[in-house]
Length: 102
Ligand code: TYC
Image (cartoon, protein in one colour):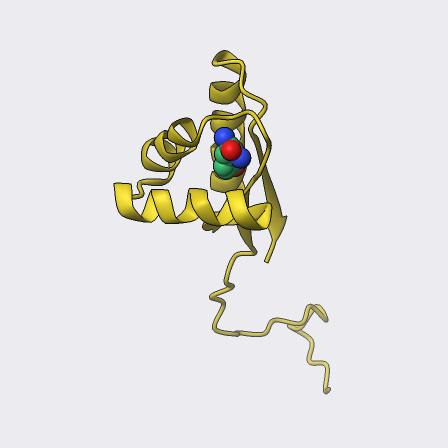
């Protein structure tokens, strides 16, 4: 690299800068107490699922222990988890909602 008088040695590089954000799965965990209807409602209300899709996801969690509600950026995933945990707690259900990096 040849330094010229007017150059202060600061490297400037132009690079197309479209970075994809890290994405996070939001998961529901099974338990023995939360009513199935409540879980279906959560999936409809917080994850914009239709009744069929919500029921399919709920049954998947019921049978396999864990299931995906959606994939979001960090802030959105964090908000979904908080909303679901608050809602479950308000209704005194032990439903657990977590997020994990994809
Ligand atoms: N296992 C619960 C029941 O039998 C239903 C349930 C499904 C609970 C999914 C939590 O994330 C869950 N009532």
